[in-house]
Length: 149
View 1 (tube, rainbow, N blue to C red):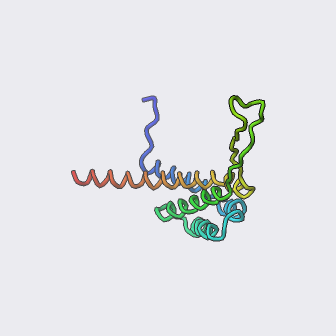
View 2 (spheres, one colour; view 1 turned 45 degrees about the vertical axis):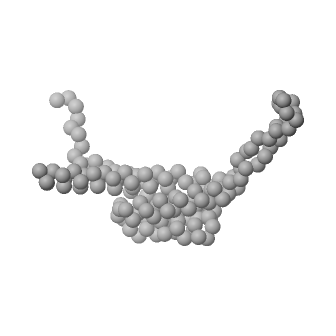
């Protein structure tokens, strides 16, 4: 045999959890400095809950996944609240068949821009957590199925 043997289920799960731990490292500082200052007080509470869970608990479970999803939702709401559309006149020389027309441009407040820039790291962590949880659940269900036969 010239190929590599596939990783055992445990090795695969350890790899997924390692990915979570790597993404978790430094997330507290990221949330403190790049997210919380740009949110409304209510949204700050949801993100602080995620921050506390990340710093005090080491588990990778449904609670972590749900708290991260809530924090991400609050950040999305903060971005949406800081987004506005602006009508911009289209120059006369570009118009064909009409006297005036407008284009709309989406603008972000500086706070919304900061949140948008900070969001990908948290989303990446959330996806890693969800993947690890889903893999563990799939293994559990598969083992139960094999036990019934």
